[in-house]
View 1 (tube, helix red, strand yellow):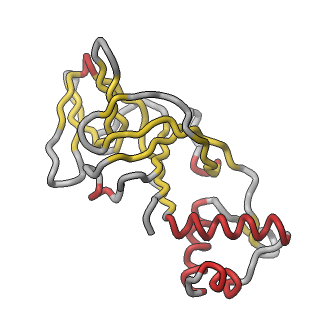
View 2 (tube, helix red, strand yellow):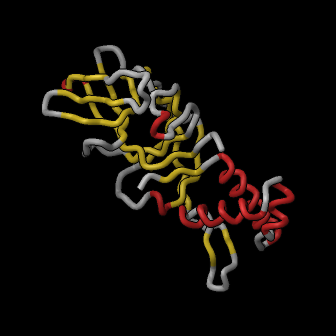
View 3 (cartoon, one colour):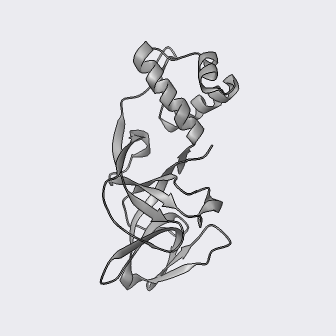
Length: 200
């Protein structure tokens, strides 16, 4: 199941992580509300969602804590949500991902979304995309498509459909056209499994 953490949730998580680290207990919803300038009911909703995603847990006495079971995932490059963008693979940064998102034996990496062809799938520019590195393509899922020639590799993020001869990359924005790539020049570099949103 695709997981999404919003910018507001990320802010709440950061505050709770810092507070628990220094005070050895979690803040009240009222304390968090005053610090983050959002109402306590919104804090409660964010905490509930963060618990469901594995970023925060409760112990036997229902006390909140930040789990230790995180892995660092490298952010490698920008991925085009439009025409394929040349791949310059290097580790730009690392991001903490709960192991509950990483239940499969394949490696994971992260990309930054660029442009807007996937907006109808709620993927926006500069969102951080968590990719599971596999190539067992299922039609209708969102995948990283790599188009290769003699000089370089170009990557794009699309909903994928395929036959024996070609890959169809379908944007999730009615203003953009499908792309069709000969399978001899294309490969799949991973499946989208999570999004860290840069918007509320």
